[in-house]
Image 1 (tube, helix red, strand yellow):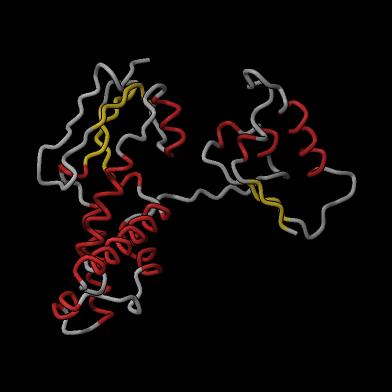
Image 2: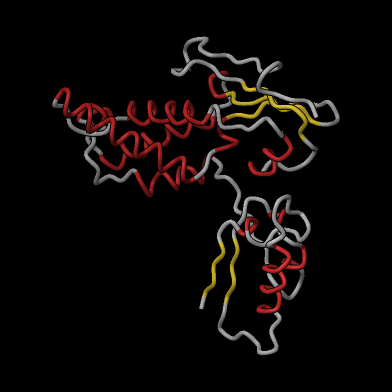
Length: 245
């Protein structure tokens, strides 16, 4: 039997930390009693998932309970290629022009498409700048979109590209997905995520985003134009979307 708790911090948060509710004061001890029960649990695996492990009651995570901790990092460029390869398959309808550029090889075309879009996602260029964070010690760091990529984001990019290919087919009659669709989908995905950082409490945002280390006290959003070729909306949030603590 496998028992899986998703968003574990919402149920088993540290006792006494609730603002308007103390429900964790009864739920956490109940879980602990089940794990440590008089009768041993045989053939039972308990798994919990959370982006805020710091909010989970420490008693749950101590040795003998949920003591094996596995951190799932954000994908690097190589991991992103592997994830893309699960969604961009050679069996997909590919545009004739893209196929012609690679000698008609479907596998070669797909590999080139994945390579191009991953390079676009992971390049530390001006158009990929996302945030500037200020740490408590005064140091600043620029974070790029690659620092926030995930498997779900990659899946969304591929889904967007497929929709673009379908729309182009309906409009022009030209069949097949192109590298241009993937690149445009990548830009659109970045565009939709640009307003996500919650700067009301930068330190909480950092914990949710998986940013560890020195405490973050201020966030400034850095956004170039949607196509990455124009000045676009370069946002200086000193006054309205950042906050010193």
